[in-house]
Length: 434
Picture 1 (cartoon, rainbow, N blue to C red):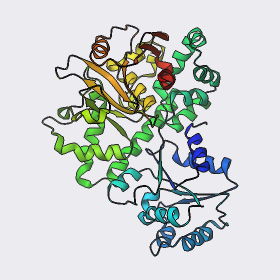
Picture 2 (picture 1 turned 90 degrees about the vertical axis):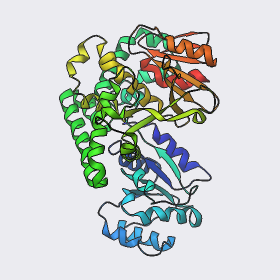
Picture 3 (picture 1 turned 45 degrees about the vertical axis):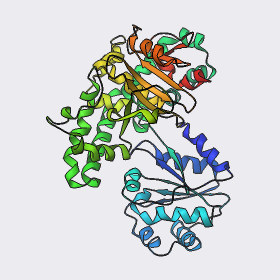
Picture 4 (picture 1 turned 30 degrees about the vertical axis):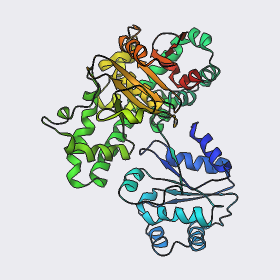
């Protein structure tokens, strides 16, 4: 299975100012596999340490963090010599031993020759709970579920990815139905590695659903195991309310849908917990389409998405029969799957800061605004073939962006500043902005 993040790891390895790297991401998005695969392909030796329930490692890091002593302990534990030039050191579930996280500072300052990558399924929570280290001593990389391009490669359709990378829309249009069918599969299967691998090898949608249910159950078990006891009921209610939030015409998050009479202050910590674990994406509203968008953020209004379109479909019990029902899958429950899909592809780009726009009266809403650092790009998501987009037109007239994007089931077309980008090619957005 190819993950584009491995290219980032090669860049990290070659960097002259390389720091210990922390990979963040939700449980089961493939962090451990990626680290091991990178170690196998880029180094002659890998030392893998899992800190979960590892009393020996907890003891090793409990006293002084002098690097030569730590390295000797790692060598004894792994029964191998650690040569800084050709050995990758992997710390997995590193949040279980906070002192191991703290040691990264000393590796960077006193022994930068060592190549260290860390990950942990609940690492974001650990960092926000005060398990920290000086800013600037580590690099970060976010890992998400497989994108649609990565999914195509996993199911043996690499030639279509080559078409996308080449920007050959004429050929893509000729084979649009194949791409649309693959996109339907992606809506159902999603990008969780275990689900994708199962589908790639067996093409069994029932097995995919079993895997997705098991992943969702594991997430709910994490609520009970790792969250503060008083937060667990709120976490469950909030998590289970997300599909109904997205099924609304206006997808702004409403606390009253979590619990009648629910208020923001009751759920703020639960939202932060879910965000820190990588289970949800919180997309804030902005009221003005100018750089920097952060300056115009409305902290009280936001949309909330889950990490994966396949898991969202599983949460709502989406029937596999809808895969055969024309293009109705794309408009299923108010186009929520399509908006989730688009956000999931956009968020993998670390250079994008993503918001959404509504005017004060609520009469104009643009699904996503992207702050690229150089420009603000409005993105209108249309699940249907119909391209009536009054909001996008109103936004363009008011803020005069250099480029506006509408993504839908329609074929590629570029006219003036408006780009019609097929849903299956939304990952090509960056190419359209160059």
